[in-house]
Amino acid sequence: MMMLLAQAVFAGNAACAPCHARIFQSYRATPMARSSGRVSGDVPAGSFRHAASGVAYHIGAAGSVALEKAGGRGERRLDYFIGSGAAGRSFLYTRDGFLFQAPITWYSQTSRWDASPGYEEDRASRWSRPIEPSCLYCHASRPSHVGGTQNRYRNPPFAQHGVGCERCHGPGSEHVRGREGMIQPAKLDPARRDAVCAQCHLSGEARVEKAGRRIEDFRPGEALADYVAYFVYDDRSAALKATSHVEKIYASRCKRASGDRLWCGTCHDPHTAPAASGRASWYRAKCQGCHEPDACLRGDDCISCHMPKGRVVDGGHAVLTDHSIPRRSVRLTFESPAPWRLVGFSHADSGSRELGLAYAEVFLRTGDRRQRDEALRLLEAAPRESAVELRLADLYQRGGQPGRAEPLYRSILAQDSRNLVALVNLAGLLAERGRLNEGVPMWRRALEQNPCLDEAARNLITALRAMNEAASVEAVQKTRAFCNGIGD
Image 1 (spheres, rainbow, N blue to C red):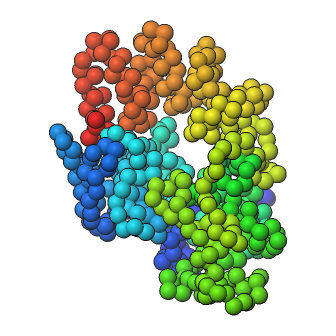
Image 2 (image 1 turned 30 degrees about the vertical axis):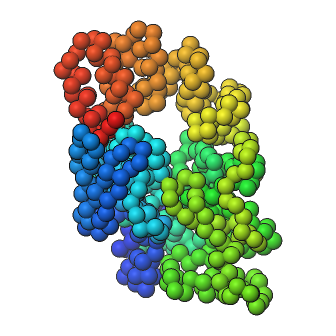
Image 3 (image 1 turned 120 degrees about the vertical axis):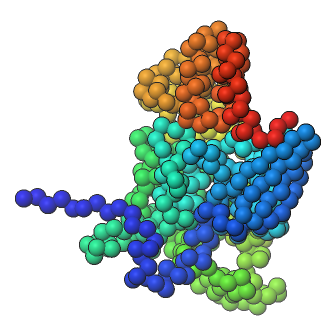
C-alpha cells in the first residue's frame, strides 16, 4: 500500500523555543521579530498638526487619537502597528473587521509624529486606506484574510506578531514531530538562498505575480522566480527606497567582484542584532572578511562612509541604509530626466506578459504616457487571462476608449463576480451612459468588500440621489463620513 507523506504546516515560533532556546530569545529582540503587533500601551504620546489638512492630532500612549480642526472633532483608536520602530512605525485600525492604515506615523529617527507616507498632501484626515496585503505579508506572520473582501480579516488579523522563524526556514510541523529537517538558507544554491531574503527585501519598480501564482504561496527552498517577476529601471542608479536592499547590493562593486559568495547573510545574522554601541566594529569585521585592514583616516567605522543613510523616496521621513556600498558618498535621488524603461531584474524576469503588467503598474504611479504605450503594446499581444484583461480594460478606460473597456470588465466579472476594480470601473462606465440601475448594484457589492472605498461611496451617493432614495443616501453618507475623518 502506498503511504502518503504528511505535508508540513506552520507551527509558530513557540514550537521552536524548547530546542532552540538561545536563538529563540535573541531573535525576539531583532527588528524582524518586532515588525508588527497589537498596540498595548506602548505608543509614544505626542501631538502634531498636519500642514496640508490643518488637522491637529493628539496621540495617547494607549493608542487613542483625538483629531481637531476648526469646526470639527473626531476620535480614533490605533489597534495594531507595522514596522520595527528602527526607522519608524505605522499603525492600523479596525472597523467591523475591516483593516485600514492610519494616516499618522511615528518617525523614530527624529522622535516625532507626522503624516504617513502617501498622506503628506491630503486635504483631509483620511482613515479609508485599506491595508495592502504585501504589508502584512512582509511584516506579520500568517495573515487571516477573509475571502471575497478587499481588507476584511479575522480576529486577530495575523496569527503571530512579526516575522516568524518559518518565514525563512519553512513550515515546521513535521520537524517538530521529528520527521523532517528544516530549510537552512545558507546551505541552498545561491538563487534559492537569496530568494529567502528577496521575498521581502526586493520590490523593484514593479513586482508581478506569474499567471496562476501568488507570492503568499512561496516557501523557502523554492525558486522565487516561479512565483513573481521583478522589474527595475534600465538606469540602475535608482533612488533609494524602503525595500531596495537587494537591488542596491546587486549594483555594488563588492557584489560584482565576489559573485555568489556575497549575500545578505555575509553581513547580517538574522537571529541577532548588534548593539548600537558595537555596530561599527561588528560591520567592520564583516568588511575585513574580504578587505585587508588599513589605517583609515576617518577611524574604524566603515559603514558611515560606505553604507550611508539617505532619505527614501517612498517612506515619508524615514532615512535608511544604502546597500550599494559606494566608494564615495553619492546622491541617492534621480537626476533629470528620470528613467522610464523597465528591464527584468534577472534573466528569469523577462516574460512579455509580466513586463506589460509591470509597465501598466508603474504608469498608474507616474502617469508617463510612454509606459502606458508599452503596456498596451505588450498586453494586447499577450494571452488573455483575468490579470491581462483587467489592466487592458483600465488602460482603455483611462485612454477614453470605454467601448473597448466594457466587454473586458464583463469578461472578468463573468469569471469573478466580486472583482473589485472591475465592479467599480464598470459601474462608472454604465453610469456615464445613464444606466444607473445597472451600476448601483455593482457599487453596493464593492462596498461590501470595503465599506470605506471612497470612489464607490461617492458615486453611489450621487446615483441614489438621482434615484430619490434618501434613506439609502443617509446610510452611505454616515459610513463615508467616518472613513474620511475630519474633511475639507
